[in-house]
Length: 161
Image (cartoon, rainbow, N blue to C red):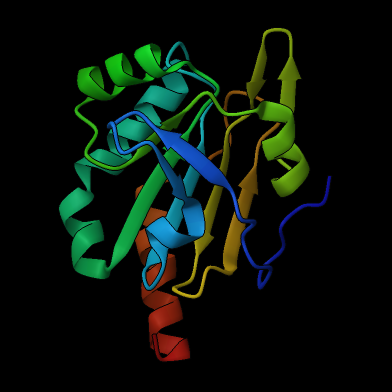
């Protein structure tokens, strides 16, 4: 399970969305924009819910900076829809992820019992390459919106994006 280093193209993951749009390819959904991909442990995780809410709270700032967000967990569709509604999330949220397949493609850590992905985050450039990856082996240690906004501003200033 390789870790995704800076400059690595993000894998061609297909995600089932809870908003009724069926499936999207992560790279297609974020193409042409800086992107944030968040794997969360599930709707039961208070740290994950806080992270998702924090990204929603800065939605206007992310839109102004040209940053799109996509989240994913192993939760089933009904549970994911309930969480999206409860948290008021406006960005795409995927459900029913195959934890082992996602881990094989991205290097994310997997909890075996109960089976779920550990918190993992990626910032992608507009070409779909990893700018930074944040891997956690447990509940804490994750991307925060202010860091993402600062990183994107830095990359734009120094790379001409």
